[in-house]
Amino acid sequence: MSRLQLSEAVRERVRAAERVVVFSGAGVSRESGLDTFRGAGGLWERMRPEELATPEAFRADPGKVWRWYAWRYQQAAEAAPNPAHAAIARLETLFPFVMVVTQNVDGLHQRAGSQSLLELHGTITRAVCERCGSGRDMGEAIAESSERPPLCSCGGRLRPAVVWFGEVLPHETLVLAYEEATFCDLFISVGTSAVVYPAAGLIELAHQAGACLIEVNPEPTPFSHVMDLRLADPAGEALPALVDAIERSRWPPTT
Ligand code: OAD
Image (spheres, protein in one colour):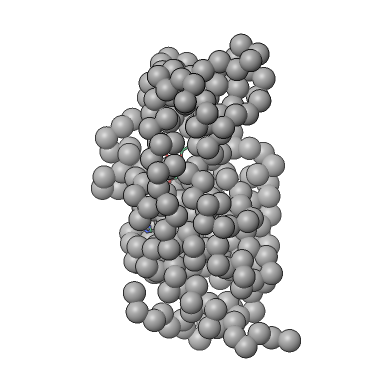
């Protein structure tokens, strides 16, 4: 993507911004080789979420669900952060407060260097005991048993530390995310279809609170019409260009 020129209005709001939220979804990891869920080639086109990503599915066939998450863990472990993750991490050098609120479970934002992160849907890098709640490294748990979930020392069964459909999001994480969306000046939504709630409600909150809204997604979403700026390019191209433009608009710094 060539040099991105922000409109005067967006440039002014970016220049004045102090609090930034980056709201990310599966599309941000697409250029790292990981599948999205929806759209052409998405996971939910060839697999059924109710057979793989619900508590009922795990009860009915724990081995099947465990193997699917072991496969996804392996893919994420072998993937590397792409320029979109790196650009998001770079935002922390440009603003006093940046919070990445992700629906992704792949751990790539951390590996790219993002320090302030809320994982709304948990993480695939950890396993957790269904009974006592104690956690373990997912890679170790898979190494112990790749075909079915291993047992915890308490006798309970391990599961991936992700949020499944029909489960509530971690309360504290969600409250913090709501706060960040309500009080941010700049909200960047990237690589999400914005159809899964309550996560997608963060865009509504930021909009109601009057934040400057930017969307990065090759496809339109239900919120595209409220955006101040929409970049319809892949995140790995659009985000480095956007962060460069943001950096230029914040220079020289205000005293
Ligand atoms: P989706 O798969 O629903 O949406 C991915 C979005 O990324 C789509 O809007 C694509 O157009 C866009 N996209 C694809 N390639 C892109 C690229 N290179 N750059 C930027 N955008 C790109 O993924 P999420 O919105 O993250 O939940 O899905 C939300 C939740 O639904 C997930 O966390 C997961 C899923 O079912 C659970 O498993 C609970």
